[in-house]
Amino acid sequence: MEVFEAIKTRRSIRAFTNEEVSEEEVQKLIDAARQAPSAGNIQPWEFIIMKNPQRKHKLAVAALNQTFIEEAPVVIVVCANEVRSGRGYGARGAALYCLQDTAAATQNMLLAACALELGTCWVGAFNEEEVRKVVNVPRGIRPVVIVPVGHPAEKTRSAPKRSITDIVHYETFQEET
Picture 1 (cartoon, rainbow, N blue to C red):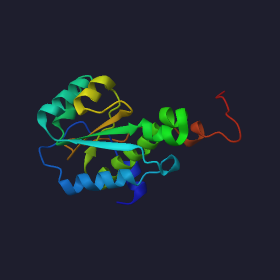
Picture 2 (picture 1 turned 60 degrees about the vertical axis):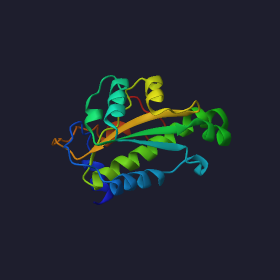
Picture 3 (picture 1 turned 45 degrees about the horizontal axis):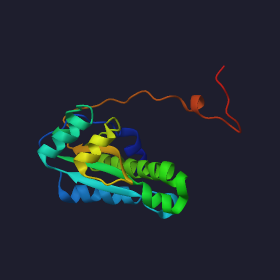
């Protein structure tokens, strides 16, 4: 799939078939994620791949009872290594760059999944401390995104997007009149 097609056709999927996601497909997603840019090439991302039904259930509960998470054959928890980023860039690295870098890696993963005809959803609504317990991450590693992955069981439609003229400013920020 051509990159612009993947960007335009990727959608959030919240219903999955029972078809398995192969280990090869999971590795392609992780490989795409790790190709993302990162501040100073620090690569602060960590990926926790979950397939165990009981653990996925606990994760769904920690994600404010979003049950579609546990229905996906694979769930990837994307974490940011604040310590690694902080070593390179101090407080700004720990508080911001690691989140930006992890977001870029997550978007690469979502686009790769689209190209593989897999469905995903960027889940950011969760109780961070509960997710931390479920995936057993130490302090200094922060769960940022939960990505359920599977074969889509639903058709989605394109969501309206704001026009380019509404979001682009030249030279300085221009308030809408």
